[in-house]
Amino acid sequence: MRTRRPSTLEDQRIPVRATLAAAWTSLMFLYVYVDVLNFFTPGVIEEIRAGKVFEFDVSQTFSTSALTLMSVPALMVVLSMTLPARASRLTNLVAASLYAPVTVFNLAGESWLYFYGLGVVLELILLALIVRYAWTWPRTTPSVTTPDRDTVRAQQQA
Image (cartoon, rainbow, N blue to C red; front, side):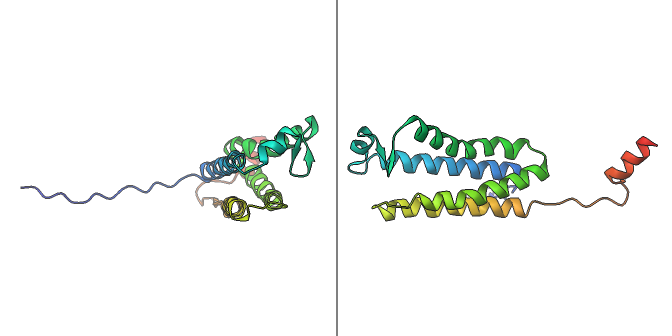
């Protein structure tokens, strides 16, 4: 009779770029779910039909502004994966830092504080993780055996 030994799962390192893209994707899902679930709050659909969202008139300007605001996380998914490392790091740090106050603003004037509060807390946790992952992006050190980029470039130009 053979006894089965429990196997150990391989814990592969996830690239920072993929981690950042996943965090931005999760943030977008939270934004969408909070907005969709908000439609079930009594009176919200009636206000939208009457042309009001929070204190704002529903207009092309309002909708364009909302789309612009929400396109940033969508673009950050792509930018996190495609920009050069230094640019990706900086872009993630700036975008996540600017989104924290935007996220907190979503609590303004809301009567369902448990619902919106939970959404905002989860979104702020994701933004903090984005800042942390971008801030602690691993750096490479020049190898002793491999010349650095400036040395190679100087040799090629000589």
